[in-house]
Length: 385
Image (cartoon, rainbow, N blue to C red; front, side, top):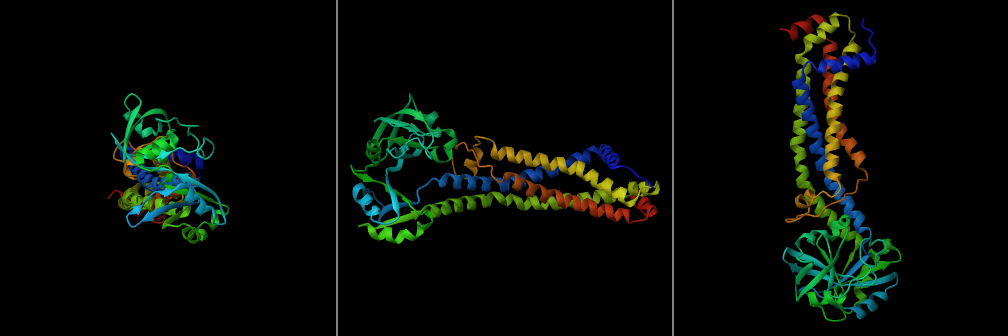
């Protein structure tokens, strides 16, 4: 009976893989590719959803917009603020001026920087102030400004001087953003003095925001639409889930590929039954044969799965990646550089690695047990017939 140590079996299994390098490399490449595809398809939508949720955590508790039969319409600032403050539980009402304007590179979001939007948390990266005729722009517009000038066209046209650029790390929400003074923003968007686009409200108890919607709607002298932060997060995540679902369709052929790899592993082990029979005839125990097969599978599968997972994590979480913007966010030009949230990524990668590795090891173990339970003579006759 062969009493080999674990270390000896590990080295034996590694040397045995070198006897069939082509098959080993093909199997390892298939396992690595499968892990890479599955991990990328599952990590990207989750990371985007988490990043969006983190950004929306700093959004207002409630947003009030005035609506008519034709859709959105501006509201008078003083009357709107006074109506909102009548509701018990509203601790802050911030008027906002924003809208869409055209540029040489396409539509952009124009936003008026008010006194309440200073550079403190959660508005890191915003300027202290903007002078009339100046603008701060997102990273997506930096390469398209000629001589630091930008022409905006909406209800009225305005050419502004670019005074600075917003942080690239905030590109998910500021990539096509143009910050102006309230006066310049009103001119571009066609708002009269004293008019605002909507109201951002802060609630004393954020969990009670939903309960205040009906009371808020009744406090205004015109029809309004009230949106909660939870509702906005749900809409955004639903959009990401819908687009990410198309991306995860690649998991279907990937699962089929996993079945083919498992079947190939079983066939390979059964096809080499003559070697197992020879080892049994030379005194190897059933346990030794099974351990050898498992060590061989681990030497092959574990590095391949780890490499696939590391490559997937790199392509998804590398700082400043741009390809998800074109694939999932619908950007046709200069997609925003993304800095995705990595929370929980290690657990997701471990799950995906186990999904790939466990069926492969189970197939190898099943073939090894079958071979170890067969008489050595039958194995040698079947393997070299």
